[in-house]
Amino acid sequence: MKDVSPVFPGAYIPYGAWGGSWFPAWHTSALAEVDIARFAAESMPLILAKKGVEISALDYLVSGSTVPWLYKFWGAPYLSHCFSHRLPGFHLEQACATGLQLVLKASAHVQGGSHETVGVLAFDKTSNSPAGVFPNQGTYRRTEVISDIWDNFGYDPSTGQSGFSKGRGETSMIACAGRTARKHKLEMNELAEVSYTRYRQYYDAVDTGALDGILFPLTVLDVRGKKLGLVDGDYGVRRYDSLAQFKAERQLDTGVTAGGQTHASDGMFTLLVTSEAKARELSPRPEISVQLVASAEHRADPGFMPEAPAHAVKKLLARTGLTMDEMTAVYDHNPFAVNDAVFAKLLDYDWRKMNDTGCPLVYGHPQGPTLVRVIVEALERTVKKGGGYALVFGCAAGDVGIAALFRVNDSNGGNPA
Image (cartoon, rainbow, N blue to C red; front, side):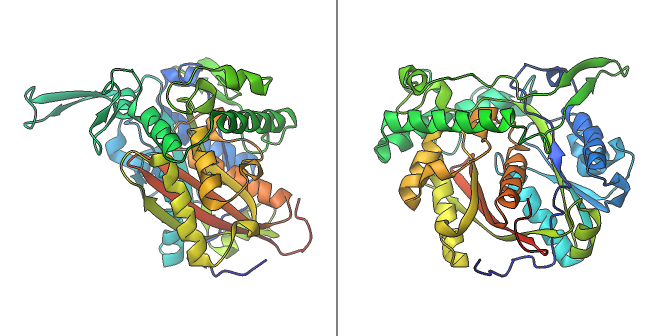
């Protein structure tokens, strides 16, 4: 394995000290009825305890989400109060790139020496999302009311394209996928095959228990402490048994079908970023080291979000001197099958080698925690395959692409699985 110096050489991710909820689809679970921020904060110590880590080991917290939540003004300090270990920290968001940005910022804090054990907590609830009322002197109505999820998905202020600009009812997010498919001349047969393969990968991972060590059943309680329900699956995932089903679906736009795009979900995920010594202390497998090697971002032309991650990965490879052939695991946040097909075309890479245990295209997209789950699945897969480099990337609102490279080593040598 070619050695590339990490951008934050003093920062490590304790292998295995991570996990999260399953991602139930919009309004399919009791998560739709609760304060997702408090639920995520209270779940964090439960998940870490399953990996042998006490919440008291943390000395800082970085949190992230994209949908407004009650008491968001108080950020990470409030969240740490919810799990009874009062920590300093901050809250950030960058649409669907939020999860990866959290890991980057946590790594910078550890590298700078200001903190030794930083918790990363990401969450979002698309169910029952709030609406905001904004004074706006620039419009004739003087007041704008925005339903946070649906209006932001239905209108892109950077391009001025609304969901109904062509009278066809498509949202601007679908429009960007169809536009990218036309630009790169992607064929529907290939996109159907991408979708079918991604579902098969996910079904296989669930059926074999490959996700059981990172996704945990969590009980949802009401304000009285009474059980509202149990979240123990990615509810809402469709069941497809043949490629023909994908090919038969109606195209909502060029190359975009129901099975070829993700769905809104709720959920949370957590991991830690620490010093090397703390990583060995807190990891259930201290012989395995995980480090962030490098990252890159790119902004594509207006309305071409699905191609932005490919350009970010190109920058990342050029910066590190590595090639796609040197990647042990390749995982992405792919809201559309178009994302994977255009990535394969621009990088000359076989999309069949990606997302071995599933991806957001299938299991859903709660935005804030999505890329944290993607990172964890990629790292687990890299360990299973004997170590090496894990490439993680995705897109975000504003035609942004983000990519990061992680390195997994086993100090004992051989296959760490």
